[in-house]
Length: 68
Image (cartoon, rainbow, N blue to C red; front, side):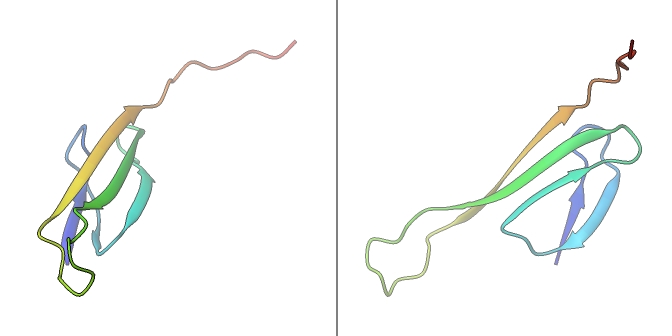
């Protein structure tokens, strides 16, 4: 299993295995999007050469909209 941490403040958000995950950090309110990217094997029976994890984080705008 792998630790899943916020890309902005490094708070541990969980642990496990994933293919695609979007999770909001309760501490800094950043939306973290994690995705596994694989290089496709040349031969269908071959295993992937490598697996890399792509992580992006987007701070959430804290402005509030006034109504009326």
